[in-house]
Image 1: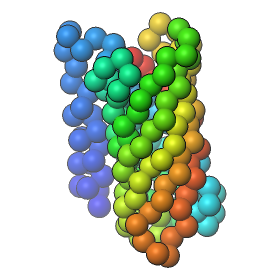
Image 2: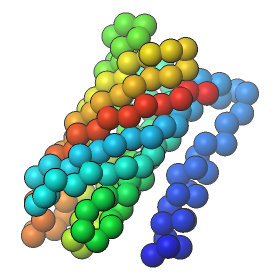
Image 3: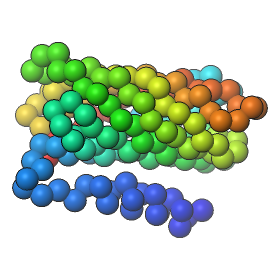
Length: 153
């Protein structure tokens, strides 16, 4: 299990090798997720990386350690379409895939959205909400509330 977690973390940060031509396209940061409708209140702490392909399209892989009885992980990768509302505010819908071991390993989808607010030149705070319909019959489908920050480079 330790090798798997280490490999997942290494894969997450392998995406962050930036070059001068990619200035402003990358962002990394910490995030806290609250998993509701999962049997008990589960909190996840972790991080994410974000790469913007264009001004509107970006991809965001993330890795969360779920803090409850029997530590678990949640790995997700979302595609987001960003609407630039003002110079500071961005709004985005998101869809993607997820895999976690809340109880047993299962895979599912992420469907949701969120916003970013630029608090400084290269710093954003963000919040989001997504539903995770899972591909198994016995699990409740969690609704995830996210808050975090990111540094753009």
